[in-house]
Length: 370
Ligand code: GDP
Ligand code: MG
Image (cartoon, rainbow, N blue to C red; front, side, top):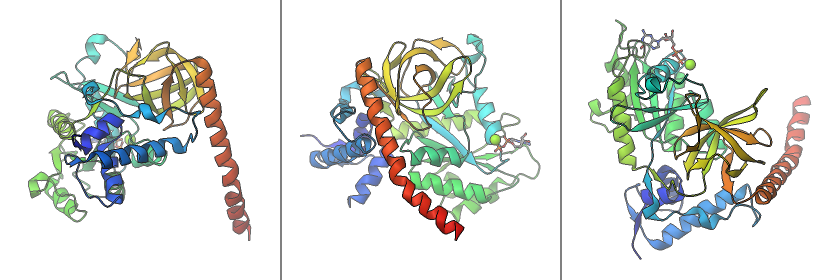
């Protein structure tokens, strides 16, 4: 049997290459995403990750992990998912707004931008990029803790007039821990006191070596306010995405992760879901965390009602029984009884976890009283 690269196996499992690399490292195999591994190792990894998936849902009641690996010929390129991190006031929100403004299809569609937790822009070349709209490392680490590694690329924003600050360092640490490639955006270049050279030099201390310092971390000077350097940043994101060779099978039952969810007065439970693989369609029956449902409507980030959502596309989903949590997994299933069965099972697992967690909580409560 042929050997497969770590990256391709990741695409076939709809996992991130970085996570497979980490698992292999733990198994005593230091390899990169582009290196091939043999069949036995590949199978071991699949079992390992299947096991992880099943941890929340450990029985034949839950979704069959054997459907987890897509055939290579079913894989198609998917847009990268980007998270913006950095110190407070360094311009994360401003940059997200500025990047949103580069969307070439938003204007012609006449849609009003909706804040649904993530948005997608189509750039001049026709390529797409998905941005998570919840900047900051809290959202990032919380999602990771819930086992939802949705971010492919981190853009680290550093204000050129302020340099590295505590949350900048935290963001670097989180990004490294997650094994996600980083692009440094040196912002506020319009300010007279901007000192990008100092930013690049100070980054060395944290082993972030940008290209200008002969390293391999891409960096770009921008001004979110004056909207300069944005094309350059987009180009670098796309280059990084190309290196990652991100792919997914769009032609299967959809799977995705909840980015945020709320109970809307008029519309009921609403969840923004980022589709990881497959295509989510109106009418699909699904399980989402411990809830189940049938897609009543899909609303995109421009507020338009759409019929389907492809991999890496964020979309608001309506039609579930209750409000799921951030990071929860959505899986499309074959019928309603199956959906209820899996949801009930998951609810049981969650309940069990809470019960077993109680003694520890009581313990710490009592020790706090002492
Ligand atoms: P966040 O806390 O990282 O989300 O930062 P914000 O986007 O809220 O920006 C913080 C402040 O910096 C705001 O007053 C922005 O107007 C300002 N700001 C953001 N980007 C730039 C920039 O490129 N140039 C200048 N001069 N100010 C900026
Ligand atoms: Mg902000």
